[in-house]
Length: 254
Image (cartoon, rainbow, N blue to C red; front, side):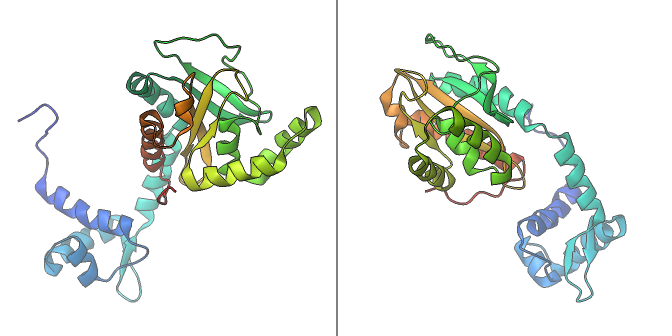
């Protein structure tokens, strides 16, 4: 038996299949459909469900269909409270940088805009004035576009307005970049922020679909602005995986 394999309780493993089916369903399910999706005999599934109902993991509707109960809700909320998307994303960056060879920035939205909270350098360093606490331009950065795409306007409006008072904004171009970011879960820039460097950014989403953070790869390679670039593929794959871990439901990216 390998180190990653542990002996468990088979009956619990079997019952979990019913809960997994409920999690993927759009709503309550009748016993026949629920047991079929879990590839279980209805009588056996009913016994598991009876136990789940008694402990509150599952509830039975008036029409006899089954859905998650109050204990499942409380467990889900507790799990969400204990998740720290920013910290967990930071822990994933060394592997991303090793895989891609590009420097990675982790940013969150502050009252001033996209703010760098972690900097994971690659083996090929370059000179830049960006560092921890740096605030990136909203409308000229890949990070700004991807965060605005996945945050409510009420959250981002003041910072965008403040940037508009400091510089002339190409609002039409930025609107197009934001729309592309929503469809692709990616945003790209060339050297508009750091001369000679290209960047691609992807969001890390929470259960409500809003961005908890953004991860940005930067480097001198202009090919980094292509969605098919292996580093870009790796970036979105990592951010999508983290987003799903945090409860986000992702549509197929364009």
